[in-house]
Length: 355
Image 1 (cartoon, rainbow, N blue to C red):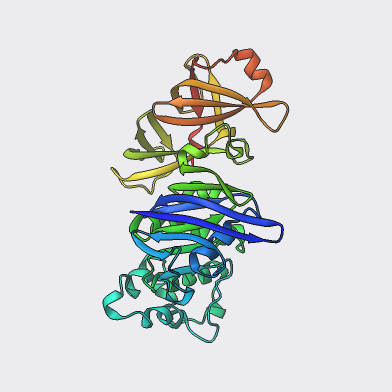
Image 2 (spheres, one colour):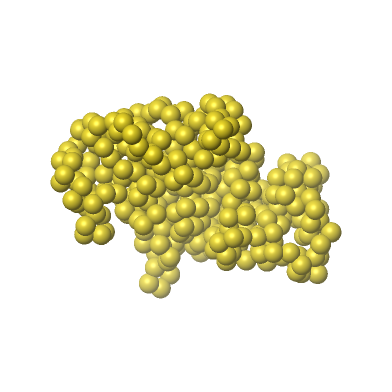
C-alpha cells in the first residue's frame, strides 16, 4: 500500500517538482518552511491544480497520469483546512451528516457514531457550531471529512489557527484517529512538536522539491538536516508500557535501548506508546551517576558531534540500542568530556521532561 506523488507545476517565482512515494497508511507529514510547496502539493492531490503535470496513485487507484485526470469533485478524499469552514446555520450533527448523506450506502466505511466517539463530540451534537470553541469546531471539521469515507485525508495545518490551550485539547483526538483508523493522512505543518507527536513518515520539502523522505524518527535526528538543529529538536522513541509505580505516579517503559520512567499514569500495561525527548533535556555523563535526582540513565554511544546555530552549543547524536537521541550541550562541556565518535557515555533524562 503506497501513495505515489509525481507533480510538476510552475508558477511565477516558484516551481513544484516533486517525485516521492509514501506509505498508504498512517500519517505522513509534509514539513518545511512557509512557501516551500506543502499546501500546493495538497492542492495537486485534491485535483485543485489541473495544470499540474504528473502522476498520482492512491493505494493502486490511478487518479492522475498522462492520459487520465479525475476532477476534484470526483476524488474520494477529505480535506481539513486551517479554518474549519463549517456551515454556521447547521448543528454539529448537521455538519457531520452533510458529507455522510452524499456517500452511497455501500461505500460508507466510517459511521457517525464511531466518529463522534473518536472525536469526543457525543455531547455537542445538537449545538450550533457558532456556540462551540475553536478546538471543538476543528474536531467537527475532521469528523465531517472522515464521514465522506475518504481514500486519503488531507490536513492543511489544522491547528495553526488555534491558541495553545485549544491545540493541547485537540492533539489527543488526532492521536486517537491515528491509532484507530486505517485512512492514510497527508498532514501539512511547520510545527515540529505536532509532527513528532502524530506522524509516522515525513517528506521534508525545500523550494518545491523533496530534500529528504523516510521514517519520522530517522529524519528528525539526521545531523545533515535542519530539523535536528531547530529550537525544538527532539527524538522520538516507540516503547511498550511494562509497569506502574503507583506510589510515585511513574510509568515504566521498555524499548530496544533500555527502559524509561515517565511521569504519566494514564497508560495501560502492554500498550504501545510514543515518547518525545527534547535535545535540550538530554545530559551526558562519562560514568554512571551514583546519587542523582535524574531517574533515567541509558548506556549510549556517540555517533557524531556537529555545530549548532548557537555558537556556544553543539549537537551530539547518541545511539541507544537501535534508537537515536539528540543532546544539545555547551562547547565547554564538549571540551571537558572530550567526546569523540564511538565513545561510550551515559545519557541522562529527567522523567518530568519526557512527553
